[in-house]
Length: 553
Image (cartoon, helix red, strand yellow):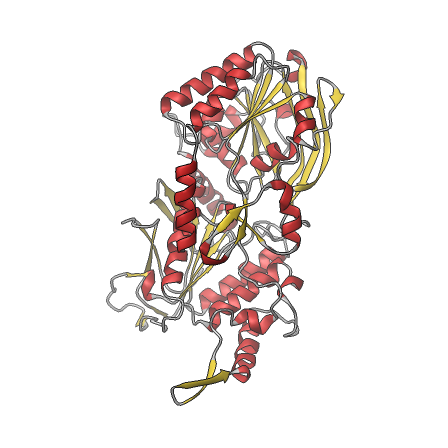
């Protein structure tokens, strides 16, 4: 895609703190980094974030360009680049205007010799006008951060990177909050505009790294796609210039195989062939879910055949921090007596939000839809009402929202306080920045206090709740990430207790990031992507077959 006239030494970004494995990216190229594991992508983001914090005011150390065809030079650490990181947690200050946001943290000063004598406002206006024009942000300088939409915020952060003379920019799923899926050739939306801007930055010689779980979209803008697993690069696919639709589809299948474990039989079926053979009948799978009609694999008994316990219809939930955005979008499903239903998804899939919002509105805001238990409409707007309706919760919900304090402290906030604090702009979403990216004395002290104050073993606690469920009067068990922190023995005990719980005619919904486990142990596994239901797979479906449904974009 790119053909810069000159090149320089490649940059290397460690895949996690202290890791010897690193991603290599060439100047003037876009590298998309895909992984089924949010942990792997988070490790790269944390490594890049830590590097930025170590050199916030360092002078540019851009390597001298080397003519194409000259002898290759050794790659250099990202520390040798002027590095900018743009994560899902916005770096735009809501009360600052455009110029103040462009120079946030690095205001230029007027000097009398070596003595600073004030802020160089003239230079700020001139440079801001230049970089804002470069990124296509045509708004009055007085525009505040809280008046910008998602695309404008991203343009503003890219403008800030240009004022710092960045030669390496790392972005975390930058199109996640934008409106149009740029993977669609005819889409002319904010995502397409952003990706076109990244292409222009690449053409200026800047190296761009995009962390993403959207392999189909990545093939529309990247020069190459790296796939990570277990904090190492397991494959890299070059996107040829002028690639045909057939070429792109073959690359997408190869990337999905690398992300989700490859073919799993001697015949070497393609991802879509595996999907077609392993999928349930078309009536059990959403239309368009990778051609999922087929004869292979018996479909599980339907809730009607077993006796329906839980029915959810048209369930939608909005993001607390971005109320105009849906984190769960019109999801419907049923759970039958004696049935275990899994819900699988990658990061930002909405799986956790779905479960917690049904159970007492414990996630998200402005939930709409209908919940019924044993054919009767149920009120689940509080935990007390959810319990009274017959729902039972066990698992490890993460403290998602935090209030940032001085000294690096990030204090978890209960769901009941989220809405009020969000209205004042005091909250951040902890899921959007990996925990090891957080630095500061306060963060370390708070972590030490938490480690000392943990009571009991997490796996044992979940197991105890599971064992109590069959004797309770409640009918449907909600299990959220029950294997977090569990030993292998505890995991086996949890699965055995789960089977015992539903054997008596009760039902269970299990949310886990371990999709392979869900496919092995659940009667049906629903797949979510960006808040939307993309498919329903029977027990025994291969992980390769689930890949296109987990990462359809």
